[in-house]
Image (cartoon, rainbow, N blue to C red; front, side):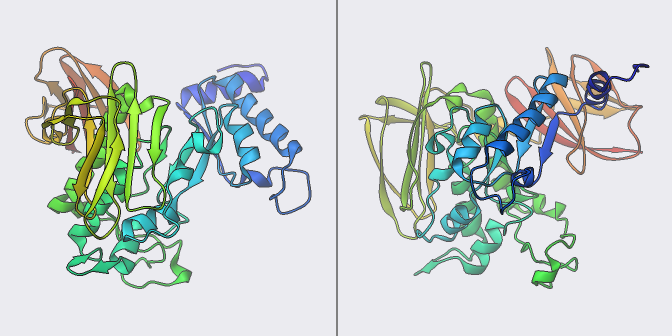
Length: 398
């Protein structure tokens, strides 16, 4: 530890010692010396915020800096282009979309380039601590037409997959709010008893539903979330800037990604009746369903398909494994014994250990075993990445 007084050294030490990835600042439009409600463009505020961020990057050049700014786009564009990430509220549009209502359901503002930003620093979100849960809205206010009822749990969960496919694969970071990947359906105003709903209960603790993992339809949504994140992390096409969006307030929507080595597209029906959805593809030929792994010959670059309400199709023009082969809780290449994780496979595996709050405890690459004596008693989640496949296991340390 440095003995001389030096804010640079001390702050660098703390960020390194405690593995601080960065900082998130709330309500940054209030970081100003200019009177007013913060809605008007304020050059002095930009200067203050850029100076703050610069001081952080002096200590750690790759630190994340995230602002809840929520001002006019001019300021946010300037901040984003300096490397700052900014929250982007898409809650209302995604709530309308999952419920099956087209009014105000345009998803375009969730795309950084549509805001005129040069860098994909938009942290878009469907849900947050300040916004209503999409699944609660779907089950409470969802549309109904004939036998198709969004208020039905299975139907709502299928529509959650549809929304996720048009959300997670967009460029830039995304936020997944607590249990959103399992279709968490308690209102933001639910009391701690899990039953009472009222405005005075907004900040009450919400029910923890680990049992959602045991509901097949909810686990299927979880697997789609995991699959989409896996694709985004491992397939560079989803980081391409050559993208065509048709994600306005219409029933049929599409996104087409193009890159030198790979292409992809997704089409979906956000309505409550079957419709034909069209997309212009970069090539004809063999395409692969990115969820099932099945191949399909598409004879023309003018793609047209009839989709049932809430249905989506995600394709890549290179062979991919099925979701079952990518995310599997079975046949894990690790076993637990004698305060160790033993790796059964050939080569190496990436092992991440998280506590039940989702906090990363450790990350290691192992070829033989990993000592666990340092872990305190408790239950942990162990995530394993091996040869492009993902596994998860629960570990109880006695």
